[in-house]
Length: 454
Ligand SMILES: [Zn+2]
Image 1 (tube, rainbow, N blue to C red):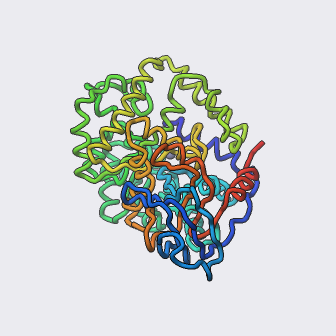
Image 2: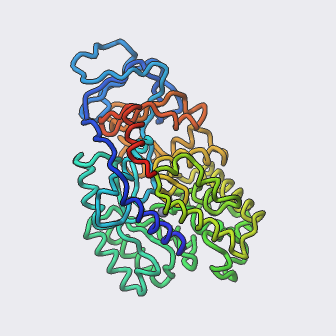
Image 3: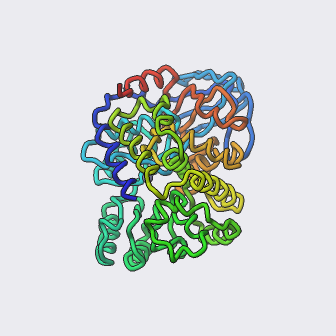
């Protein structure tokens, strides 16, 4: 997992050189005229609607032409277009650094791609200030909740360290705790206990020696990366040292006994533990094949050459490991997709999360890749979209997030095609509304151009 830390650190260095995007227009009262609405709280398309926006919320939805648009600042022609709720990237990274400026660029990459809510998975004291500035609109960007700095084998050496960090982060006002690898049953137990007493959720990785059973029993809010799942399915895992298993069990995953999946699904569901798959990370970073393939993706232009080189090298290094066997890894990938589909079908709540920025995952763009992987795993486009819209609202206990209905937040994406028919339509963005602030297609294109690195 050292890889994860170093990749995060490396990509941050170069974010600091980004230029500023354009100024996001202020919130206005607006009408989407004659648009197909995808409300997402049910699987349907409502054709020919007017969607009225006032004070950053959906005021009303009505058949087109029923009311005059006088008194509204902006009329957006939705003819032939589809309006869906903005997406939530529930495993995002905002640079954990002292300077807020580079954070803004990452936030804009998310927003320009229709991601209107993010969950920050590696907190920093400045993120509390950022959260406040996003809330009061001083900085435009997605809705933002954040963990504190991570609790890991590095930051927690003793049970007392763990308890102290839980108390400090709760007091500081972080939304939840991020757990990273390297915790042990001796340190994890007191962390989970103190966090539960104080009412601060914990989420993230499942340390190898902690194991998924303990994680479930302790009541993780989310288990990210499906960490520990594959390992739990491998017979005799107790006898296999962590090094040999590889990150996320990648070297031994091919041995997983999928007949045990229903037991795992049942216990996750019973404890209402949400799963954030970050399938992107695996398909891109750990997969066999030429790293240059991903480095040639058009969205890499928003990452610095240095970051891209680090990502390419990082993928190469994994492939150089003597335990890396292409056929086994392909099987591991397939097992992860099967797991995702089975857990979903068993009713385990899933949240859209791709892990960005992270190896070959460019903020915003990778959320669309993640959706595509869910569909490849067997989810319907509606089910995939549900993980990044309605589910995010349910998880955040705010049902004004992730739906289009009266009073819902005006966090919206206008598309030129129907994403319920083809998931790739989520990439065909005509405009994004961010808490009532409308960014049309030309604004998005110009802003993206300003964010290019070379
Ligand atoms: Zn992450």
